[in-house]
Amino acid sequence: MVQSRSLSPAQRSAKNERDRRRRRERNLEFERLQNVAAKYQEMAPLLGALRVEVTTVRNIISQLAEDSRRLNDVEPDLTRKIHQLDNIVRQNQTEQVERRQRLSQWQMQEMVLPTIGKEANNEPIDLGVESSRSDIQYTDEVLQDFIEKLDDKEKSRVDFLDFKGLPEELEKCGRFSLPPSLAPIHEILFKAYGDITAESNQSSPVIRDSYILFCSVIKEMNEVQLEQVDLDKMILWRDAINSGLSIGFKGNFAIEHLKKIARAYFGAKARNDQELKSLEERMSELKAELYALEKMHDSIIESKSSEMCRECLRDEEYFQGKPLSAGLFLS
Image 1 (cartoon, rainbow, N blue to C red):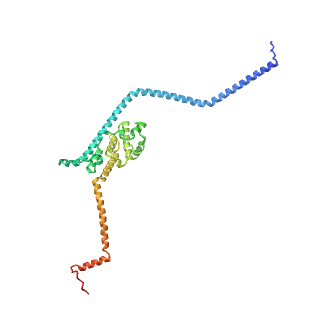
Image 2 (cartoon, rainbow, N blue to C red):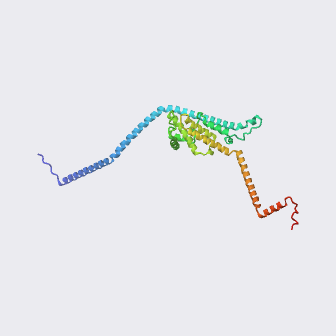
Image 3 (cartoon, rainbow, N blue to C red):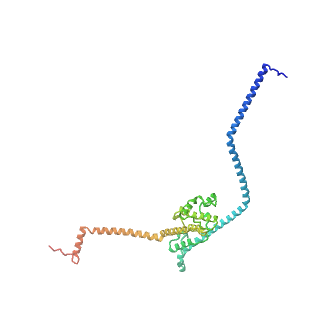
């Protein structure tokens, strides 16, 4: 049996010091590991949430990549459709110009018709310095003709571009959604008349486009007053309303209201008719003259009711049929 070598006091002291240092180091490492474990437990929920978020981001990236692939696949078709829409817009703009030219021609005819008799007699025809809608005066025939035009079921040539701000709204919200500015109009229409599109058998995009135009008319009616309306505007409104009526909308109430606006428009023309205004001014002058004569008459009557006037009347009756010397020599 080998006997262990005994340590000197200095060696034993050094050994004990090393042992204590190792124990301190082990204790420090154990505390460090405990702190790490506590930190991990504290951060475990955050790490779990982060893993979920990383998974979501990966899914979004995958979806975006898939969407990008699909967009690349449909890009040629979209480009073709955009060109088609551009052609439709240009065609609509051309038709709108033609419609306004026809309306101007009709207005000119309405002004020329009363002068045909003069032309037959070789008399000069005076259309004024400029022929415009403001020159049209009220007659029953002009009103009736225009009301009949509002009943015409002509092919609608109206477009979103005809309504201020509508194309910009559609660009923001998408053509397949109702613009926010038309939402209150939709609610009022639905409350008053129900779903006016219910009986239409057209596709949803066609119904939606016509309904947007229909609501845009009601919106403009709500924003303007009679003096801001002209014949062009009413024909435009008619076309927009007809775009819905032609595909089965229950919107005849809108045409009837438009006729009421037209009658009011021509009523304003009648009120502002220059000949009528001249007559009214002459009537006012005559009324003022009559009032002055009535005042003079009343003043004369009042003066003749005095005692002095009655005495004069008695003396006038006395001398009737007599020489003015009558009564001179009576005592």
